[in-house]
Length: 60
Image (cartoon, rainbow, N blue to C red):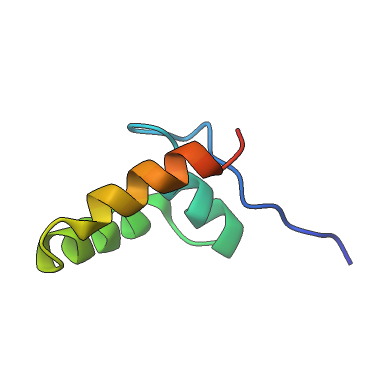
């Protein structure tokens, strides 16, 4: 069984974080971006901080 690594994607709009999450879970990148956008808006933009942290922590 292969191991999966969470990495940033080359399918990127800003930094590849949402694309990397989509590849890791086998989801559509557009769906992940929409979910992320909705969660960010409804949590008073706390998702923006999470995105920056993931951008720094996730390898390419």
